Image 1 (tube, rainbow, N blue to C red):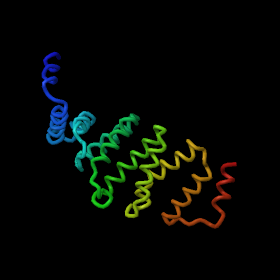
Image 2 (spheres, one colour):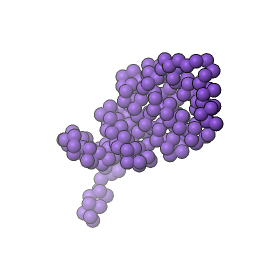
Image 3 (cartoon, helix red, strand yellow):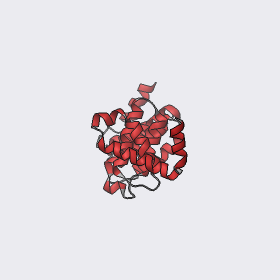
Image 4 (cartoon, rainbow, N blue to C red):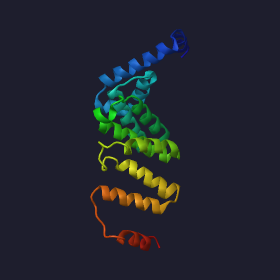
Length: 190
């Protein structure tokens, strides 16, 4: 342990970050899919040590995988961190060059920020996804679900949540009789 500390003290912090990132790259390239899954958080953490200004789709994918794994085990702060790191690694033309990856990362970030109660950050991610005309309504479903959860559960704005549901259903091509749905919803709520 003291030898490791002594060796670490000889290496400058920038070099240490670069060295850790290099170790992460080697692990990412050399590990089988099963072994990578087993140590996904470690590999992602190593790759994330030296990312300032880095655009790397493979690293963004690793962060997406780590974020999904963190969400699945309810470690939402880590999920948020991995999703945010993944977003930062996307190129500026992400909605044209990598729309599926971008929508997954942004949707997961929005969902997680909602779980954490950070609604202003959640809204930023939601607005980014919802502003994309090239993304279908169905691809935006997780962002809509995050918004609906916030409206209905955090803010108790049931009427607004119902209106948003109706708007989304209309965008998906679902038709309803005039005035029938709101009357039906009021009857169900009563």
